[in-house]
Length: 421
Image 1: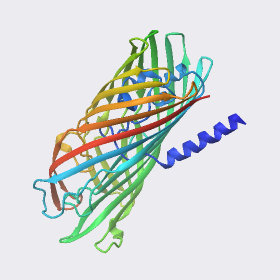
Image 2 (image 1 turned 180 degrees about the horizontal axis):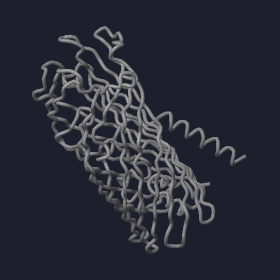
Image 3 (image 1 turned 90 degrees about the vertical axis):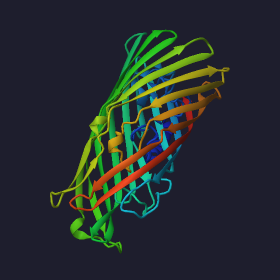
């Protein structure tokens, strides 16, 4: 009966996670590092090595070998992103600054792991990528973008094996689904304007692997890798006129191919004494997979649009500390530098990203040796940036320029429940 109850709880949690997939990027680019509540307090420093709980399924599956027993983790993150634009000479003239293009959204995670002898098995449900920006529909940059939304759901079954007291290895497969919606205003004829909406989705597969080395009783080093994932997005382009009626000749099924980046992380965890732990890591993300995205109509075979992003590879460096106040309370802190993959020359209104600097705090409270709660908060300082982007509407001579400045910031709040059976 106990096993059946646990199984029903796990299944219900997975369904809730998939239904509430993430829609906003709080890491650089459109990646989401918010994959556990326990890691938030340390700015996710050393996540490839800590193996603090079952969320290691995402960060490094080899870490499942270090868990004390079967464990379930349920976490949620409130992401409050503020993105504001100030016009400094966009054309054509007309329209406002777009309001706050950010939003308050929710990112969930769910993990289950079970050690069995030298092996351990686990599964995670999360959202590794997400993006949501939405301006007022009449803003000055409406012809280059109004709404940009990317959502993902990732299911990640994994296995690990403890080779000996020093080394553990692990790996998993990732079934991932993504949905994309892009809207913008269009010129249909001289002084006649309408709107265009692209909605597309696809399912794809990837994989991840990791190694952890227990260098000494007090020092652990981890290496993890997540593969790129290639999508063949298919959906529909819908063009509407000034009255909202569909313009049938310009509307049709469409396709666009895109590859989400792979990433490699090296992490370390060092216990100084019974009170203090240090964590650190370096993560490399292979963003130059995301270059130019071409959108083709499936009925006509003609190219309908082109998104020139030309993202560049980026790094993330994080450091964190734990203070074990007593057997029940652990207090956490961390900082990180998160490099943006956006090239200044190719910055777009859909992804007006810049480097981010994390400052985070958190706490873990253990009710007993089975149940614990983690709380975390992080503020992300985002560098002010500017945009000077000129685009000619595809298959048209209508040209617009968005020129102005962006100010942004992010606040993250996390709650995690961990239960060991």
